[in-house]
Image 1 (cartoon, rainbow, N blue to C red):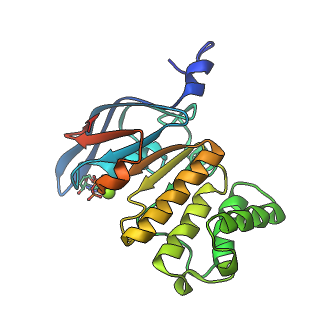
Image 2 (tube, protein in one colour):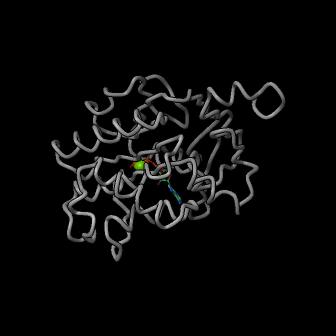
Length: 236
Ligand SMILES: Nc1ncnc2c1ncn2[C@@H]1O[C@H](COP(=O)(O)OP(=O)(O)OP(=O)(O)O)[C@@H](O)[C@H]1O
Ligand SMILES: [Mg+2]
């Protein structure tokens, strides 16, 4: 499907093309099969919510799609890259260029200011210091935090920290945003605000969004909701 001559159109339309994906963890001598022959096709520009009971493998799936973990079986093509065959040295570059991660915990560097946290992600992606800081400043303005740019994460509220994390996720204009319960630690009002920002920036940059959430009202914002159950995805 992807790769050879003539495959380009498919790759352009499908930002995620996964088939036969299996993944197991070994724990205390036993094997726990989490994903089993999973299939997922995501068209560029789509907005998908992913639900499922705790422990069904939602975070594992996101980690595999984003190249944070290596898949053990199946085919996994993300933004035209065959992740099963991508050498390790290129995986970090793939993540930095292509994926915007937002986790439940903000994962900001505590010793860096909001501006530096966002700018660092752009620097790692190869932008000059000047460009990186300019982009970081623009994004902080978009999430309404320009006046907090010089604050360390410890001096920001939970909602503000998560907005910085959203700005950081978007600074390299990723093709795919992978958000794992991005509002899980926030109250209703902040949850709505963070989701609004993710949606607004995704729209602006034309990114595809896959968001894991236990909150049915947030899931209902997505065009499609999929449920992970017994290692596979089904319509919710
Ligand atoms: N590194 C690991 N080693 C062993 N088992 C693991 C590891 N990571 C996850 N698991 C197990 O794999 C299963 C799926 O975990 P995962 O975190 O993907 O689930 P989840 O759907 O994201 O759950 P939650 O909704 O609670 O976040 C769980 O049973 C978990 O205990
Ligand atoms: Mg999880």
